[in-house]
Image 1 (cartoon, helix red, strand yellow):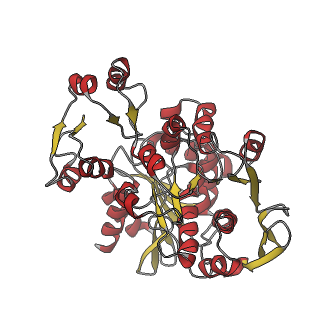
Image 2 (cartoon, helix red, strand yellow; image 1 turned 135 degrees about the vertical axis):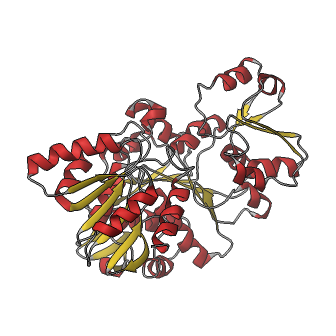
Image 3 (cartoon, one colour; image 1 turned 90 degrees about the vertical axis):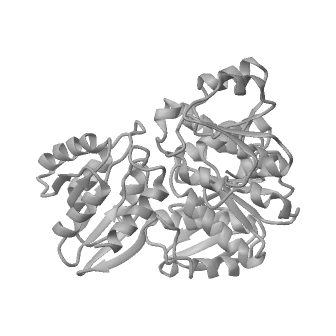
Length: 440
């Protein structure tokens, strides 16, 4: 919607078209109320793709779409909202990507930089449209952007990469779109593809794939690590978070002072400390954020305690690795609600962890049978006592969780899958979970 508002404001004649109908897009249609736009919903007209002067495409639309092919054959340029923002932004951009942790890392960097400059802008996959703020962004405004593989795939066309590019980690994801891990990695490399000598890449030293990108970086490279002491970047030494600034080291805070739970969040903290310091934040601002930041919505978000059972919303966990990280955060008995749409990912490692750690598994969505069969296999192999249930809806799953979970346990929504089989996105899924829990 941000691109539509921006283009209308600039005087463009805008047509909004989607294969989905008005009812399916009711929320988006309502957001466009009052704008002079032409809506073509429930199908596309090939003439729109032949005669337009510019196509601004949602990056989730497959590049092999026949309608995009029509535009290409007729010489119509294809762009994205993020590409428009990168071209128009007057300030250096901090871009953050990775399979897991990018949302939390983006929020952490934004929080740190707001302590230095309250005008800091945070957006991309997190927050609202950046184009809505483009006119207020000054050359010295800190800008922090979360970037998906879909967005980076198109960003390559601009010849622009972020001034500071952060890569949290890489594991298989979105293989329904990218087909192979190699293609997925290549899409992610858009974040460093056009960096120059004055730019910096911040890479995860502990991830062998990401560490290997150093050879392809044209600018400076800094690392962060949970395991190794670094000459430049943030790392863990004993129970301390340390930032090596090249010529000296600064102790940021104790690991135990970080409010966010789990080793994965410690890694996110290291990435954000390195990026924020490179962007001009002093160690004191980093320390203050680490000691006060409580997390992002839909990521291990505490919802409520009812009958001695705690409910957590981790709807943003759309990969097996994210759910693995979530399971490692709870010593209590876990009732896990998982499953969703199939992105072509592998669940073997997660199934083993579920059999070993979870007391009750409640499965929903397209992947329910796939995950369930793997867990049954691991259950037999490990002689696990995990109890499996299949539910047809999230509402049914929440009721089942309340009924089956004993006092002192945890109910965790951490799907390990995308949401598109049942919801518009992970946010809607998470909001629904919270609503259902509060209605218990």
